[in-house]
Amino acid sequence: MTAIQLNGTMLQGFSWNLPPDGQHWRRLAQLGPRLVQEGFTSIWMPPAYKGADGPTDVGYGVYDLWDLGEFDQRGSVATKYGTREEYRAAVHALREAGLNVLGDVVLNHRLGADGTQRVLATEMAGDNRYYAMDKPRPITAWTRYTFPGRGGALDDFTWDYHLFKAVDFDVMHERSGVFLLDGKHWDEDVDRENGNFDYLMGADVDLHHPAVYDQLVKWGTWYLNETGVDGVRLDAVKHMSRAFYLRWLDDMRRNLGRELFCVGEYWSGDTGALVHYLGNERAMSLFDVPLHFKFFHASRDGARIDFQHILAGTLVDVDPIHAVTFVDNHDTQPKQALESTVAPWFKPVAYSIILLREAGYPCVFFADLFGLPNDRIPAVAELPLLLEIRRRFAFGQQRDFFDEPDLVAWERTGDGAHPNSGCVIVLSSRDSSEESVSKRIHVGHSHAGEEWVCVLGEGHPPVQIDENGDATFVVGKAMVSVFLCAEAALSLDNFPIII
Image 1 (cartoon, one colour):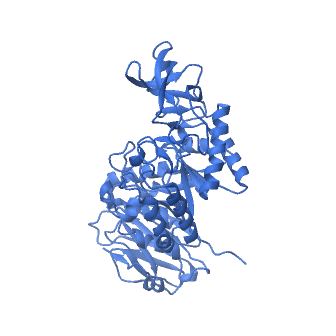
Image 2 (cartoon, one colour; image 1 turned 30 degrees about the horizontal axis):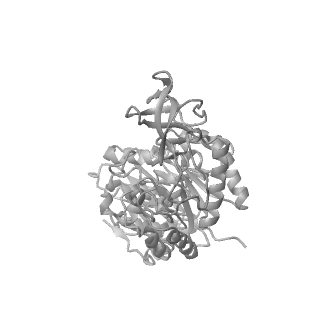
Image 3 (cartoon, one colour; image 1 turned 90 degrees about the horizontal axis):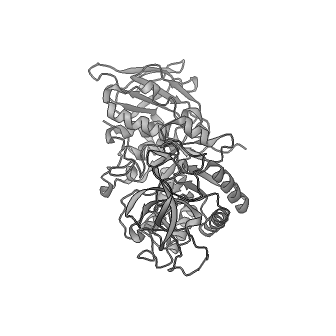
């Protein structure tokens, strides 16, 4: 018996400016049934451990990996999102609802140290990490992590300067910079931005120190077993040794005795760099950052958008199996360090591309789904409809009609396992002064004689599929138009959106 195909869809279950009220784990736990109904199959939850800013830390300023909101540290017991028990309960509730849960893992750095140490270090140039700006000299660095609030509970490992490579502040001279600690060197299997982008922030963890590696394996095994998450999202992998992650993920999977889905954040618009990091092993997937930048730039180009090449050279184009596609995320939203927010008017187009095409594993941003005033991000009104079309009708063989820069289309032929499945999507940046913008498409002989209607777009008269399976789809001024067979359109839970 052949299993019915499901279109996997991930939700990034947070944004940067969620209220620091300690209630997010509770809110997510309650959302599970709704998310499954909308077609989500997995959810990526924010970092669960205590950050340097305690109750307001988004989670990327890691202080103590072992504190999931259980100990009075950095100004609170709970994290920004809640307590350890609320986190575990949320993971359980989301899994019970039918979602796979991804935990956010940040192993690159530490912030919020409990004490300083006098160490020998060399200041390196910010734009060339191989260039020493001076001779080695004594500095005072925040490198002592003793976790007094935890008092050795769960684990008694403490950190000092031997376990780090570099820091970003010299307390002795009150100077910021990149200070490479004496006897340390940059890993070579990282991104080449700034000559070598091993160092990112805070106290940079020496991933290849034997004591560090053993600690991270111990913690990772505990965390995955303790929380029950199904997979992980790995932060800042462009700054982390590829060899480390090949080894660490292998140990995690061996210790768990099961597969562990993993997606890494390699923030680069260079697809070649992403492919190189994946290597032959393909131990993880990566977010398709090059595609995000295509969307970002397209949303600024207006009528000059080249739809014919919008997918060319992206990760989903060269390695669709390992590409997690997205439109925006917490780092690209307004006022963030990597701000590159896709303009709201273009988001229906971008989400049509990642949700209604066959290739890639799409990830929807929490703020785009719900609309969050704190983040200054409005909800994408078309998202519920696009998610429903993906869940119910975007199946079967895909045929592309990417033959004109300003007018492209693709269709999904549908399959026998999903009633009335199949869809046609047309993207147009053609001059709206033209009376009729249309695309001739071969939908397939299996749809001959059917009537198809526009459920997203300008709303033209129904389209009749001829005896050869061909039809002309008129889109007018709409930048994105989606067509379904009439029976499918009538069954939609979300009303067709006709502009």
